[in-house]
Length: 220
Image (cartoon, rainbow, N blue to C red; front, side, top):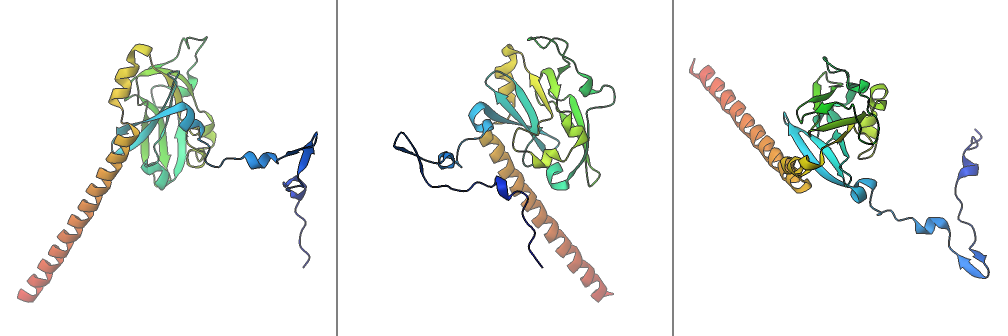
């Protein structure tokens, strides 16, 4: 069977012979690619975390005070599979938020524990996504409603739920209440140790119950 021609072949990069300009050799542009170049998040944001009901959320804090609210990498919804997302939280639809001007006037004022969105997983679990910080709602990521799987697919920061803007006088206090990257990693380590200890304890209890049941059968 004859091989099918690749329709994209004409667009593939082919390393050509070295070119020169005014007698000076010019390297291909791809030679300047740096696979270790810092990401947008690494360059412009500071990572913070907010814990609610044993689920972690990420707050990407920009130097201009803008905050992106995201799922932390350890959030159980990512392992369970995201099914649906809605900004209609019952008493209000966050997607109807409207702001005007440089001061973002008219935006909803949210508290750290205010429900920002409702996320349902493929296992049927529903998570109330918190605002994580106190601030003004600038915009929500409406694309997630139509394509909730973007939360699993997009790179860090791109799959944000919303953009919030805290008051400048509240910024220090807000950061103090959140976990830093180091504190978050310590939280994960502690949680893992506790889960492991719980599993070992449960296993021992089951073994003891099994031995007790066998002993009672022998006695009777």
